Amino acid sequence: MEISVFDGHCDTAYELWTRGEGLARNSCHIDLQKAAGLEAYAQVFAFCSNAGRPGGGTERLLTEPLALLCREVEKNRSRIGFAANGAEALRLTEQGRIAALLSVEGCEVIDCDPGRLEWLREQGFCMLTLTWNADNALAGWHGSALGLTPRGRDFVREAQRLGLRIDVSHLSEAAFWQLMDCTQAPILASHSNCRALCDYTRNLTDDQLRALAQTGGTVGLNLYPPFLGGRADFDTLRAHLEHMLTLCGEDHVALGGDLDGCDELARGFTDVSSWASFYAYLQAAGYPADLLDRIFFRNLLQLLQ
Image 1 (cartoon, rainbow, N blue to C red):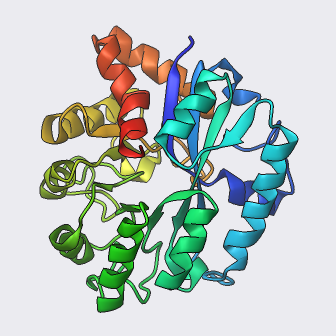
Image 2: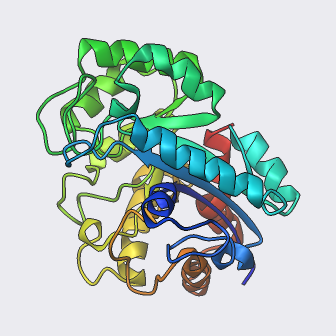
């Protein structure tokens, strides 16, 4: 089935770097061959700080995987190209190429320095999470009571001035609400599910989901079973999707598979090509084509314009 997919989060660049593999064909969840069956495909590639792990929190975790991804995109430029925003992503997909967008996951990789944000924008980055799985100089992570620090507020202000979207996946609940008080732009949760259905701190409460949608942002459906609960199958994914749609509305729900960031995926998923099977499942369940197009592609495209 030919469908359009815009996925807001993967960790494929890091996995390629650690495994010594390329983008055309590899052992990861995402490669060009696995994505070949998608009619249009845009993918946000995240660069994770790994803060809290041995060797984590260093600039090397950004620069070296980024250099590898740049080489791989250049090597395969007839099939994939970089996009800095939704408009550029749309142009690439209309040319029959994959659109690769960039994000930072944990700002330790730029030393939590607002002065480095302009460099990120120059490299084509379009979004960032303040934290990963540890507190830092900007904010608390999802397992923490720490909120948004004064430096974090300045950082958010500068990031939004430059047009970088703030991603609240991995952020503490206290920091989330303080961010809501100061944001001047739409906020997204690129790869988070519903805490009402799976009580895990990485998931968002109903109040958080409503507040995020009110900023004009999106929440991206995550495929990681511990964030889904239950059988973690297509039915479970649909339950989270339905909850998001009810609370956020049809223009504020997207995909954030966390491919290559998970050691297991929801039942029915093996790699990026499995989005087509989930699309067919939802279509059979009565989801209209326009709604599926919004969830699978258009909502994230609009957010990143």
